[in-house]
Every structure is written in structure tokens, then in C-alpha cells.
Length: 168
Image 1 (cartoon, rainbow, N blue to C red):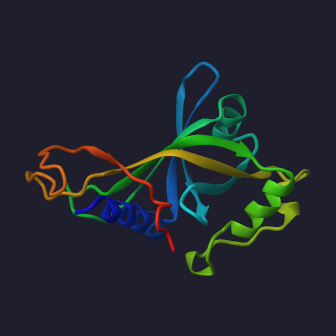
Image 2 (image 1 turned 45 degrees about the vertical axis):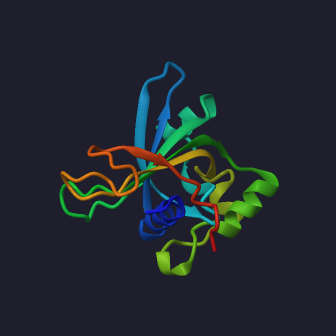
């Protein structure tokens, strides 16, 4: 399996899932994870809507560094498939908010509901957020108890990817 194949593998995981697990930390470094419905247009930026007073939203306001994982929970045991992302996140405003509303909730086939500006600005309690990815990796695919074909490593391991490389 070539590195480009792993990029495609990461894109396929993103496209096949509706939710990601968003990891944040508060000002004291205490971790917090939340499942959020997401959309992406380019695999380098991920958008979601959350209440501005949700724990993860408050955490992002204080500490914008985030981690995310999108995984296939339907594969058989010991066949884990996941893409791991890290970067920084922020509540959107101005032009960024306009752009985000055009992207979120993604294609209609995903089942999300389109947003209007009033849905994510005061007095609404919801806001639109964006995470900009700085690092991405996948759990290198392999059969249980077998080395992965790319690295010959017989253990779970992550491999850096650039899912936005050669995308659409």
C-alpha cells in the first residue's frame, strides 16, 4: 500500500462517517471529549455546530488546540480503522462564518440541516466552529496478528497522511 493509498483511506473514513470525537482541554489542561456532527470541504478544515456554553466550546475559547478522531465502529473486532487529526479551532465570525455556513452541514446526502446566520449568532445559543488541521495520521490498516503491508510492523501504529493531497 502506497502513501497515496493511505491518503485515500483517510478521505474514505472521513466521507463514510457523520461524527468525529473532538478532544479539547480546559485552562488547567483537564481533557474533555465530545462527539460532534461534522462537515468538511477539503479534509483540512472541519466544521461543527455547538452551544457556545458547552464544555468543549468554553475550552476552545481558552485553549484552541484540539485533537479529533474519526473511526469506523462497524468493522470487525481487531480491524480498527481511524484517522487522527490535530490542529486549532475557533468560533467563526465575519467572512469565516459566511464561508462556514456555505460548507456546513455538507452534502444533502449526509442528512444535516442547512444553517442561516441567525442559527449561529446571538441571541441563538449555538455557534459554528472550525478546526484547521495541522497534523493527520491513520491507524495503518492491517489484518489482526499480521504485519502491515506498508511497514511490516506487527503492532498498531499511526502513519502520517495528507488527506487533502490529491483530493477531488
